[in-house]
Image 1 (cartoon, rainbow, N blue to C red):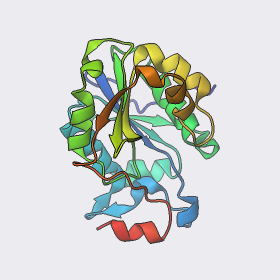
Image 2 (image 1 turned 120 degrees about the vertical axis):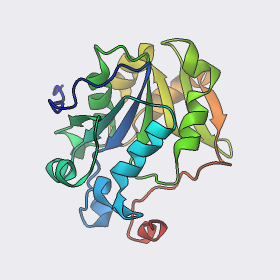
Image 3 (image 1 turned 30 degrees about the vertical axis):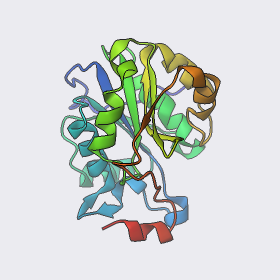
Image 4 (image 1 turned 45 degrees about the horizontal axis):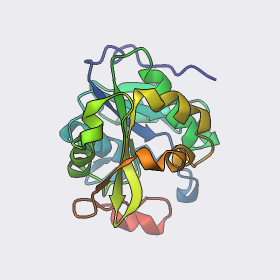
Length: 212
């Protein structure tokens, strides 16, 4: 496994019990190869909006996994205080970014990681705060919690550090942690967020109409 590279100016982030982990490496294949992190929403790149959602929702420490257009994202997006993690294998899918992000948290004092996707601008700080507020999110390194939308599991998802190795071992392609969560479904605290967020993805040209 490739060890992720972190930016030297951001590597000393303030310790935090639950770290925000933003997966922002996608290349936007169905969007003409435009990095999703740099799609414009309300005048700023999507990656900035997602970081703000994590921070305003309660995550002081935020690790951002970059891939497609990583150098351009560094140049154009304002991400002060974030730990920026390169995923050179980003083309292999979201699973590789999840593994890189969890690896970047190893050795920190984070007891859990709250995972958010950069291409879901309809999920804001309210949903982040609600998942963080779940009882399981506060109790131990074995916690598992997930937002749901009308009963369907989605993001953000919280993984206690005791699950990181298992998640990394099963995160392949674009399925991320789906297989792991399915296997441990009886241990996942489900947090309904449909009244405060919309879990749509920005995947196609038609989806761009959702951006402002």
